Image (tube, rainbow, N blue to C red; front, side, top):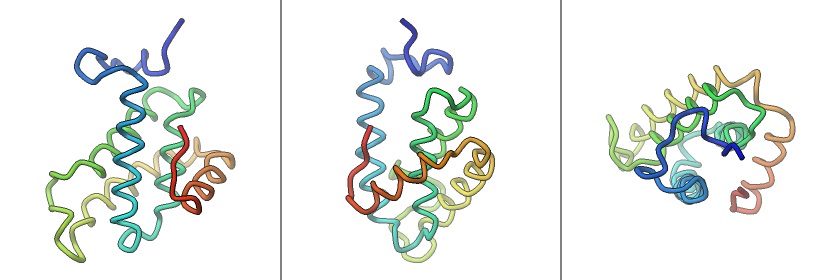
Length: 126
């Protein structure tokens, strides 16, 4: 049986199993979105992009780009450290905005609904 990420060449030996990868991204995205919520006004779109990336109907290249942008967002080390008040999330926001612009055609209403629900509940479903 084909796994969700088989077509984008994630190596389970290096990155862990698919379930571990999903859980890691989910946990880090929850933490990062709480910290950035006041500084990134389009957080609902970011979370909708997360759900779009989880959707097997989304093309592999789009999913890979989404996960790369989300990884940059959630990782503590990047070009401009996130702890710098006012500008720390600027580089993250730029990358997320450009990736979301590319993903726009693939984000469906159910992704947006899931994002709204997640932000209201404070929990991301898998």
